[in-house]
Length: 435
Image (cartoon, rainbow, N blue to C red):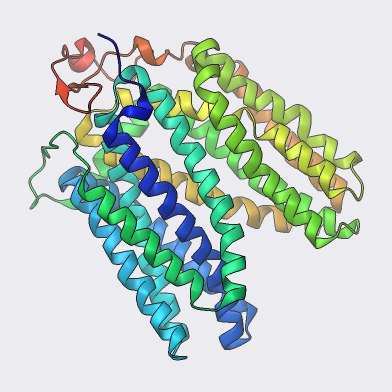
């Protein structure tokens, strides 16, 4: 049967387009929030606290959010998240307009945004796996990654411009994006999700089941441990590079461009990921990321006072990770039963959030204890050690291609409707054995 191009999959394009807009609105608010708090309180510490609340809310709500996405109607969860964010950010826009902003109000809005993002992610991830045919799922995963990078870049740029027009403008823009996304999601038609756990079940046991699933599946477990370790050291490396650039007299504008180049490389890599994922074995695509980073990270020692050159290096570093992420993300979605997909996404999000939070803190301590080049070398050594583990891992050498995985769910037809598929013969086998 000939597949309809993903661009003509009505349900996927509705979801993709609505969230591209929603991410842009959110990113505009994220830039404006600390600026607003600084203007109101004059305290950098309070400004940082607001963004910290958003991140902490995501971590705290992460595991319960995945269990709820597997228990409740996923479309209703997404609609509820868009509505809640529109109301919360709309109240802040009104408070700014009436000059009645308080720190407590901003903190509550940041917490609502964090919780909604935690809930939306697992619901969306599980929904994508049901509205996109298996053969097109790698492309959908890559396009979602590109969507996030494009939305963040666009929203960040627009947010600063809108804030200059008026303090309430970026928040009003965010409200509009959430409302448009809400209306678009109303027309989304996804196959019915029937939770296998009753709504009165024990949430803690459901969360534990998701954690056990991630740990029991050997390929999932190994890729998670390697990815978390790499993200930890690269996040630390990023902070070290920013501090090193400032110490070497790189202008703030160039540092901003340098940071943006990571996003540019990520977008380019995401667009190339579907093509590369089909032509490179999973093992090579995963191992290649680690070796490229091991080779490129020490070059920062020799780049002195040129933010644009460092930005070009960042582009080179960020080109291949989307291919590996597409390979791993597609495998995880296809292997995981539909009833656990929300919890899978939430576990991945929480683990990634922890490494993203601890890595920069480690980098700050490292660059304070070991001046510039030494800190770069230490971060490179950490990445190189993980690279050796990945290279000689027998589990990663046997990492399967997505087309070799037999689904445990009805295959999505090109128009987004389910059609029968054979049961997974591995269903009764002991989990954790290499494919």
